[in-house]
Image (cartoon, rainbow, N blue to C red; front, side, top):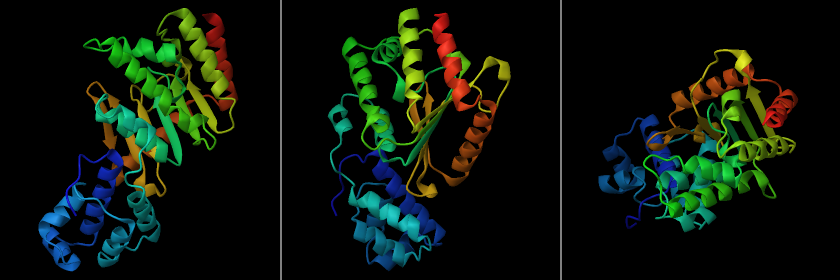
Length: 284
């Protein structure tokens, strides 16, 4: 197989899982190449995402590696099968940093999404004006076109929670994020009302951690946890000043699951959280 263009985040994840599968089988790159009747370069290219895999090839390699997890193998084969169908976010390729597109891809394929926000509201429920006000504060300042591209992309991401088959979503929001008036009072009021209305949907749960809860686990962090077809394929995305950072190693994933559980325990129940959001909106 000829090396392909730069792989997407999902393609890189498939490559990472093929490497993990080999390592868990206790095989070196050379030993794996001998088993597969290939050379070391091909194995390295597969594990770097430089060479695409068919679903049949994934199953064949898993058989050679004697992978005991049939559910994982099936999920990886499904990833390979749909490896390059064009999606809506592809229109932004070359116009936005790849991290933005990788987030779209992760959310699109997630079976459930959990987020925790302490100073920003969930991107999947931001209004255009709120999102625009956030991007207007970029350092260094973004060109108007770049701001509008980011706003349009963020609105496109929202299809995963508003389409015909919406993804189940649970978001944890600190009161600080509710009180930051991005875009001014009117924009903030409309944003909070929009957020409270979103929580009326049966697939959406929004939980608020009030100032009165005091210190809590995960304070200061912004986390997106996208659940995969099997737990081994879950992904965490962290917002940083330098852009999106992705985590997929088993131990950190387990730690982030625990962290989100603890944060959820610090939050108000769903209905009380909605009332809390609306109360802040009435204050504006």
